[in-house]
Length: 535
Image (cartoon, one colour):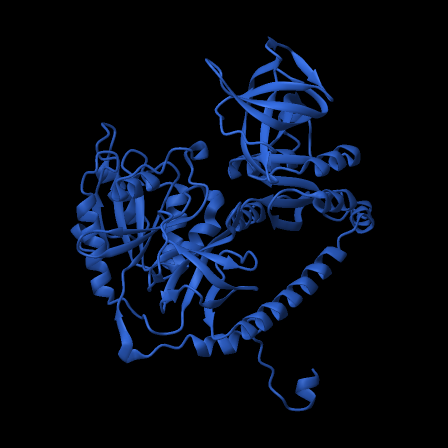
């Protein structure tokens, strides 16, 4: 209004320093050279996306995935012999819609995996819509053709209903029948990708200032902040100064997807960058700047603005307002605090929660963050009557104590769709009895022993509570949980015992774990079934 009074035009900037960074990102047409294609694999859960990538890379990456779902986005560079291809592996369940959308923003080609026995499923249609919205060409990979129940013609007919016409039917969409399990036609699929990339004439300026996109960011013990990015222009080198969202840093080390150190990262390269001062959000721009001073100034101003924005949001949430709305018959709210080990998981979970429709209850996410559930999370939950959702994120011992005294409900999940199902059931008042953890005691590893027929046993001193043989234990090192399993053995001297109380020494064995170190903390707990509803 003030600008209008003085006949001035108002232009809104995307973020502080955006104009400066845009100038830095300009490339020279005469220096443009062919670059490898960036390919995203999409499709319905269990249709074989990870198996396909596994077949392409000829190495097993499936082991250890919870519930068969790829939990985090990953980028891999593959040498086909005829050229390099960068693959982005996005999780397949509907809860990861946000990740798939982000994958399509940085990608050149989408491979849509459709199982020959299942056909087109809801997430297949979502993937098609994401590819269309991003204006990215599709290559259809009809998987599992080796199965006796495979019906390839049905899949092709269902694709026609989605306006996808394969080349054999006179359309312009390439398709190939594959078996990721047996490795059938994998080479043909790679040829199709390279052919499509030649048609697209993909180019980038390797000598321009670096520009890329953050795929993921997380904290790692011994490494600090670890940022995974795809370089889209320029060549990233050791010592380069960069801005990633609201954070800045110096490239301390560059690693490829096989955890090997590399000196440079040219266009289309997926790279792990060490040296970022904070954790940028997935999907943020990764931009090289000339000097440390400029980077610091831009990052500081952006963080200052973000803090102001966050503070205004948090200050609006109070028990008084919530109670008043309920008393007035307004829409009831379910306040949630979400903590996860990675930012991409948080975005995916929030996207899925926002799609839940209810006339009676509205979901209100009052705080989200990466890392363990700490005291401030529990205190905020207590003050705003919120439920805490932890995805691959456990509370600290102090946070557990406060949660118990304040009666804050903390829910742990390893698979996102289970969190969604639980919240839907709670909103409908149909929540089944859940398994909850009851903390029993805590012990510190003072010495490590090797016992025949048992394996590694931790010589411990019980700090608090009681350690029981029928319980489970989390092994915590430096604040991070590195293993969780059942207590396989509990001894006092050479005798097996049922329990050991605080102030005594004992030997503890945990199933599936032998890498005990002095100073590790063992948190003992038992799991109990309780009928509980989120109000």
